[in-house]
Image 1: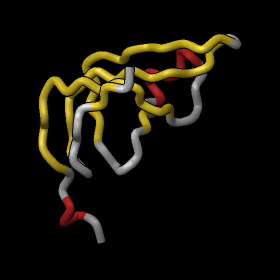
Image 2 (image 1 turned 180 degrees about the vertical axis):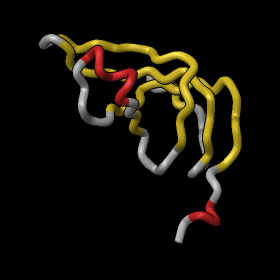
Image 3 (image 1 turned 30 degrees about the vertical axis):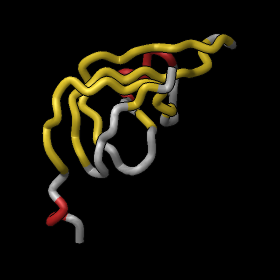
Length: 80
């Protein structure tokens, strides 16, 4: 199932992300559709607003990532 499209480091994409997590003592696979994600070097995903319903407090590993649109790169000149 591991279908992660190539996303460059610091690239921001509009995508569908599938994650796997433990919910009510059962493994659950869920797809979050139409989210903005930035690749920071680890294939992890966390959005507090989306995860509150599942009581998730830590980043989850991405098992599938389907890019809808590539939005560009993070501004590196702001890093001091």
